[in-house]
Length: 113
Image 1 (cartoon, one colour):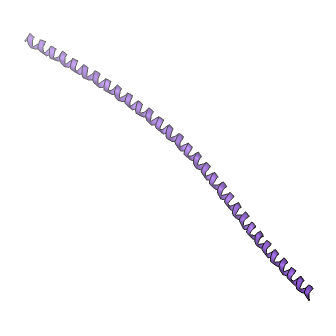
Image 2: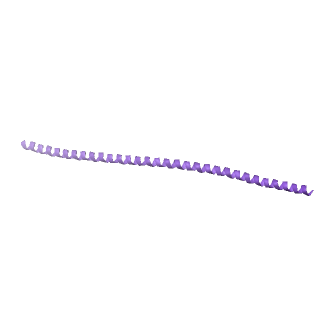
Image 3: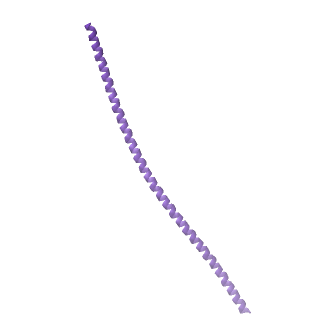
């Protein structure tokens, strides 16, 4: 009877140990799955971060180009404006000169009569 009881206790002990090991295995599997999932998430975040950085760099370059062309356009318009102002000044001078000539001519004409 004692042997049978001892055997029964050993079997029960083995079963308990196996049950403990099975629990540890399950926990390990779950932890490995969680680790794998976290690694995938991390890799995905890195990829998204990389793509966002590339997009930002492209946008910054486009912004610089837009700014440069806007500055060039403003400089061109400023030059055009100053050319037009110069033409207007020249025309005003010519009109003044013609007014003087006309006035002189009228004065001479009046003196003749």
